[in-house]
Image (cartoon, rainbow, N blue to C red; front, side, top):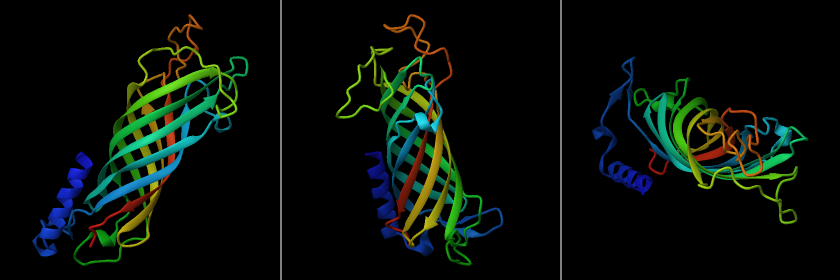
Length: 249
């Protein structure tokens, strides 16, 4: 609802206020620029798990990573945004003798800032320049994850032909909530004046060791916990995103 309200407000302002009446802003060199535009983002890719079971790519049960959000340019080098994501994670144990695995479904929400280190002539009003074709950026945010994992013994990804014998959960309040700190790097390519495409890789630190339902917490099948590591679990995302600005000039 908040995203729709922001979009409607921006649309009304864009239609009722001409460029000559918009509030002017200046950078530290005195160059004139206007804020905006507002962009809608839609992305898809894969998720990567790093936790008690493994950090190796060969042990991953790679799952989909889908996102949607808003992005707003408030300075020629800076953007602010918000995003909602769905992420599926899974992996098998790097220790064959322990023989554990998990699969989890996660809902994510994050607010972030993006910094573009290169100067884009198209971001300035006077003198107006052609927008840069390619722009790298760095990203830093804060958010939360709603996670719901299932641990089991095995080495295969669950499928229609394989239904694992799931272990009793370490806690009975799944889905649980954790805070996240996403950091990332990306590359934006201008397709048209209103449409960009970005390839983005991000890594998120979390405040939980139970993203995989495998931790040092005692469980029905292990009085000492399923893992000896007390480090928190983290995850990564690699996505291709489209960024559309319907009111761009």
